[in-house]
Amino acid sequence: MRCSILARRHLSSRRALRAPLLALCVAGVAAAATEPARAQAAGDHAALFSRVEAAAGRGDHPALKYHLGMLLNNGVGTARDLPRAYALFSEAAAAGEVLAAYKVGCYLAGQFPGVVPLDEAQALAFKQRAADAGYDLAQHDVGLMLLKRGDRTGAERWLGLASHQGHVPSTALLAWLAEKDGQDPVQALGLALVVQAGMRQAPVGLPDRIAALKAGMDEAGHQRAAALAAGWVTGPTALTQQARAGMRAVAPLLAAAPPATQQP
Image (cartoon, rainbow, N blue to C red; front, top):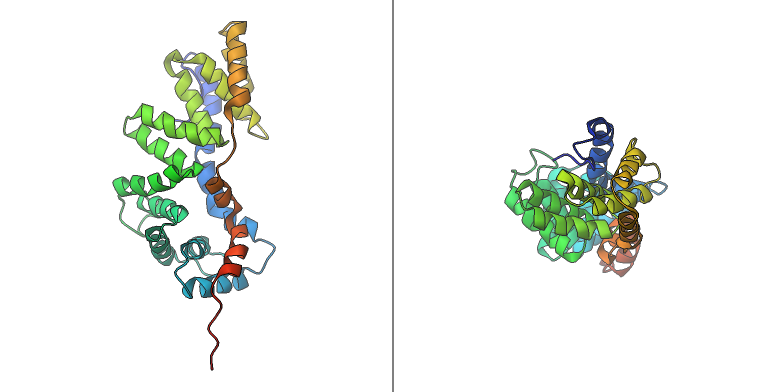
């Protein structure tokens, strides 16, 4: 499934926009994968890893296990260890940590081939847990998986939930779906405007596509599209904010962790 907002009547513009918007569709996953390194870049990664590992080992704290898994997943402060990371994510997910459930789903979906067998049904089930809890990346992924299965209605529901949180790749895909076969040009224009507003630098060709969409409708359509764009993004959920915080969320968890047992 290509992530483009172009109609077939503008094939040259489609070629110009296809690559940038396809990149948007995977940008969220890449950002999540590097979040711990960015959040803790100026700190002592090795010391952080040791503290998280010790705290996670002293009790059954699923959030700390999740963060320890992320450090191992990305090789921050330690050698990368994907099998151990997956084991920690699985333990944390079993204890109710939904961000860990999302990572389990990523592994089962083939994010790291060879670590665990591919299982798309279970991948969807694990990601669905995080999507239900409000995580935008999980909602985006569930939408893509449903779209692949041919469930456009279900896909648009989950992509919409992620898009309302400000997830630009979801918005770009919704814009393309709205314009596909001329189904809903007003929504396509409104969502294209949301994409443009949500990026520091719009993909090459997007302003031309927006102009073409505007040219195909009357002033009333322009106003409806502008109104849609103005009220579309409602902001991230608490869970999405927690995920975006990355390792910045670790300090309060470490403070609340059980103290180390004193040796006699």
